Image (cartoon, rainbow, N blue to C red):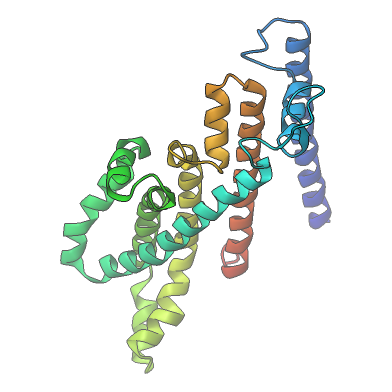
Length: 275
């Protein structure tokens, strides 16, 4: 019975979310159909959909022209998205590896924690546009700069989450494992790390969100192909329909990434919430 009620509640929440989306689209269509807003500022849903379709298909350059162009900026929109995801994937992978190692080290070495942690917090507080110019000077305008920028956006949350997770581990559990004959490595691997893993996964989830919101800044310079660069360039060209289409793609991709991380978190920490 409880399971049935939970299913009904979940279904009602889904229906409410879908209804709110439908109402938003109807309101959007009504405002644009009535001409209350200049299409330059708010194009109609049909116009945004047409821009999305055109960005993923081939078409004549102009009516009657024999020249065929495909996508936008010589790439399909899905190709722009894939390249941005690749950049974020590389930056996130490096941030996870380095961030976890630094977090473990800061948790174990107190004097190093006092020295390094203020700099981690300093980097976390900086907006990406604050140091992108310096990265361009150091690494040029290629993908290296973009990956570094995404890495720096994701690195601090992972370090802090790892540090918080390890410091929050019950010391009695680790000491019990050691007293039963486990080595320090085994105590870390089977007691400390699993206990800290929920916090680490939450940090990774936050880091992905920070990295994804940084993608437009990362792709401002020589970012084509890239969904962030396409959104920026279409805005500068007053192609508002394509800009909004890119915004929708960026938002939906972010939600899917977040859902994937939540799913992975549940798979690797099945004990959370079952105490």
